[in-house]
Image (cartoon, rainbow, N blue to C red; front, side):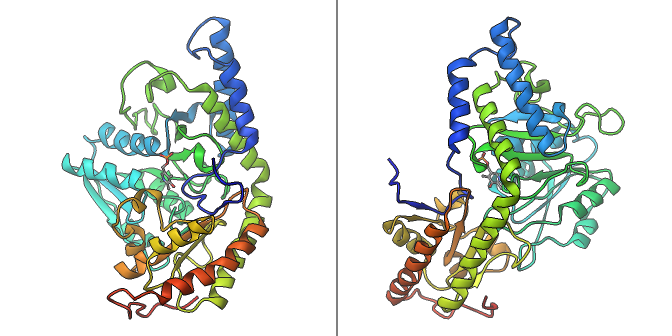
Length: 405
Ligand SMILES: *Cc1c(COP(=O)(O)O)cnc(C)c1O
């Protein structure tokens, strides 16, 4: 059992389920067991829940109900979008544009596609993590079939200029995919206004269950002229417009829809509340701990993300020391913290290995209280001081010329 007093500040890795979501799911696990494809009434009950859930999730991003395809995760949605476009359009072109700070669920499918002859342009980002729109335009060529840029970054919280990217993609008649896993529920999203063709999201990042995600697919079956633009990566029955076969996980989908309903109702107040807590942490660290630098954009960042380079001490050591104090933070993406490679995102914004390895990610959530933040801020300076007393790494003078926050 998790200690009740544990202070969980790793909400970008995953969020605890909201008890209201748990109630919804339990109810459906108990009562909604039918296969949504069955004609009898038990099946139709599930079908209704499925379609109601689809409708409310669609409304949240101003999409049409039939354009929401349920998947098992954000990762699967990213794979379906990227491989789906690549395989469907390979006769029209083999060039894809993305950014250097994407999640591995986006970057790793490209590694596979490259082996098959696709050409991937990986746009660099500036020191704040933003792509350059002029460079994006310059990289587009006649063979470009997809632009895929994440909405907001999971490590440093930087929010990309999605509206402008959507306009550029539209002007060139190129499919635009965005991984919105971290943005959903924190930034208002209107897929029409933003000219998004494909959007990935995941339930467990918004207080819903793990194991369910979705891909928004604008007007599948018609690009403009009746050409399909994604191909399924699994083949089976004709669930989810044949784009994602297998019996729909109705209880999880209903939980996802409940989670969306809650973020929809609470987004405004939560964003304000978390932004205040975020800035309190940033200001405190600035004023009380020497030699640290804020990673990511100072303003254009997620309301719940703080990422700080404590230069020259190991982020891993900070994580372990804070864990002893019942505080859970991380060094970056949950996926890369298992490997000892420095984060590709921190390297992309220009950090060297020491700076990248010395960085700590603190991500707030709906259940984070001011009291918890006060306790965290009481503990942190001592933890950092203790670690800094330890024998330094080889390269102590690694702070370079970063601007101190
Ligand atoms: C968590 C995350 C994913 C993966 O989602 P899963 O549902 O865990 O597969 C993809 N992209 C980003 C930006 C994420 O933060």
